Image 1 (cartoon, rainbow, N blue to C red):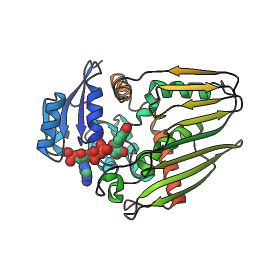
Image 2 (tube, rainbow, N blue to C red):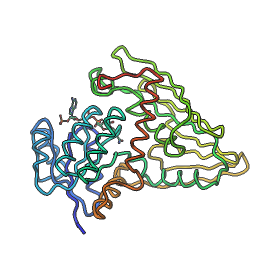
Image 3 (cartoon, rainbow, N blue to C red):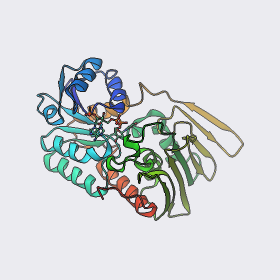
Image 4 (tube, protein in one colour):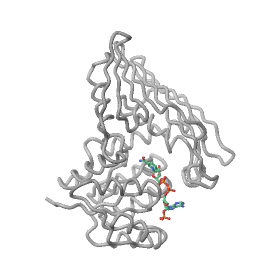
Length: 327
Ligand SMILES: NC(=O)c1ccc[n+]([C@@H]2O[C@H](COP(=O)([O-])OP(=O)(O)OC[C@H]3O[C@@H](n4cnc5c(N)ncnc54)[C@H](OP(=O)(O)O)[C@@H]3O)[C@@H](O)[C@H]2O)c1
């Protein structure tokens, strides 16, 4: 069994900094190399986190010997191309969310991973956060009775310049794929694919969705009411309503440390479940564990689930009229 897992980071932007911070907290893993479109940025990043190698292109990063896995942190529109590049070279991949721009791309990534027998996982870190895992256990364990309704939101005021990737359709900008994916992830993880979706979006002058509101319908009179925004800060909470009680995932529900369960005014219980680092620590442990055990996908976040999540996102986009140049 491999003792130390050697990580590479492709595209050292904002999230890559947080990821590299958490990687340092994981025993049995190290940052071996960084690849950026700029050698200087790669060197600066490598210096900050103690990586021995820095490369001025993504292609050069892939030539680095002894890499076990690459974390892809480019803008959404880069995920497909960058994941395929790694997988075709036989290098395992942890790829940021959204996994790609649409289902067709995700299916090709999964096919490529399977053909080359290489590990691939979406960096949907929420799945591995201890507080979130506990919430799923409570929701699925019958503690609040038959589940009927989910409400979840993720809105933040995106104080970025207009050219930033979150506003730019050419880079996959917009609220749904950036933050709306989290409420959609929660509903899809608990209930799978809806039977009906209603969704509407308000679009920016640049053509990206500023905000999006969604209603998902499921069999047995279940509903998920979800929304996201780049214009306003919302509670960023999730409420799961069962017939005998409510489970609340406190702010921020995607990496919650606090949960409460209330049984219709009669009593309530509060749980505090700390996370480690920024929370990316937990997905890193999962990838290391899979790689050490020779797995090509995670049982907790299987590739079929990532396909399904993207199918639901595509469906929301069709309903809401959110279109990208990659469509
Ligand atoms: N899991 C999470 O909690 C989380 C949080 C935030 C973001 N994300 C995801 O991570 C990805 C990156 O987000 P971010 O906020 O880190 O973005 P960012 O700060 O803009 O960084 C992205 C990096 O990608 C590289 N890049 C490659 N092509 C680019 C292009 N055409 N334009 C701009 N940058 C380009 C750049 O690095 P070089 O030029 O140095 O190569 C840039 O620093 C997104 O897909 C996002 O959804 C996930």
